[in-house]
Length: 529
Image (cartoon, rainbow, N blue to C red):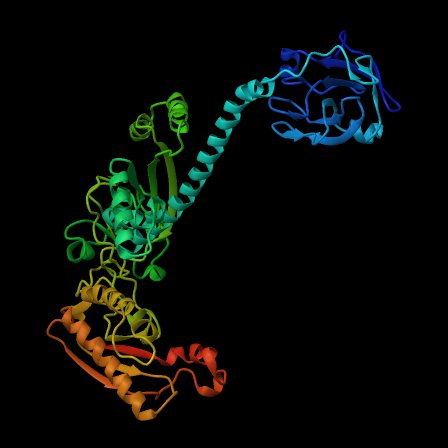
């Protein structure tokens, strides 16, 4: 860009410049907006101006501030677009040059701009200060800057929401993986994980209020799609025995014994057993923009971009919401039960219980508790040669003869106490839910309490027995095991997993090291089949 033909010759120190003067309202207002970079040794002098902005400029500039007689007071180098600069005390005029000119020409304070508009006693022939010019410039640039600020604010809020939705989707997939791929449990876990997005809370009442807000806001605005296992997966890998006992007539993809199944690809699903045991979810949530004015702009833009290929997506856009889509994949941890529908849209009602159901504890015959490698039961509870197992046991020909489970007492009880904590009761609830699935496979239970070697031996024996008794009482109060005997015993600090010699001499480090000793062992006696 050239300032010719209005430019005239001027000198700044030892540098010869071609200078144009902006002394009227419109020339001062326009400045260098929307123009390309200045040619070298050309400049724009804006009179009666002690501050400048670079809104709508296409490149960076250098700004030299002058006093009323044209002497250099200070320089602002490389002022990028959409920035502002102030000349400070004594500045009366602003000289705008190509970026890098100050350094290239060696412009320093106290050098004087020699131009016909300057006289010994100041600037002559220039109108008096144009009051209100800066305000008018701001009235033009201010709304645009405000819009950009609102847009950035909304984008930041959307970025935070997306991160929270990603985490909620992970928790939803986790609930599905341990909950037989049940979409109601997926939705419940997803809703609870979004509580921070709706206000969070510091106590139960505040959390319940945020949960209620999330439930109401998500009604009709969240869709969960089960992409895998597909109907073809259930058709190819259905286990008839599990369909009858666990699925209640619905087809079931078995989770157990994958290591002993051949990794063949079956039927129309083109999947092996491990592929069929992947839960894949696609969750679409309509995010409501919160920033004023931006909601309408986002809505109009998305409506213009929408091609109408997804009716739910179009519904969200027409409702003024931003569709946020998340895909998540996780390994199943329980047998997948076929759902009535592979798509669930939130209705605003109370979602189902998220407690994991089904699957149960793994049989010992898959680990060191089994004397021989179990035969592959094959899909549908059959042996490797295709014949059905006599018992219909989903775990194949190796029927569990019993198993042990160790519960760390640091999560069940406070240190040195025998009263169950809230976290301890929650842990036992999970054990009861899983063990009920196999209640017909055992005849009784023995609970053995242990402590660490710290303290008096007699007191440790008493504490270990009290803790085992507390676990027994809680199991019985929740109806488990039905009609089965439960024996309790306390062995104190005997059979340690960590000795004092293996741990630090004292302090919290010692307590942490000895933690494995503080336990309650649940030993289940098998019921032969």
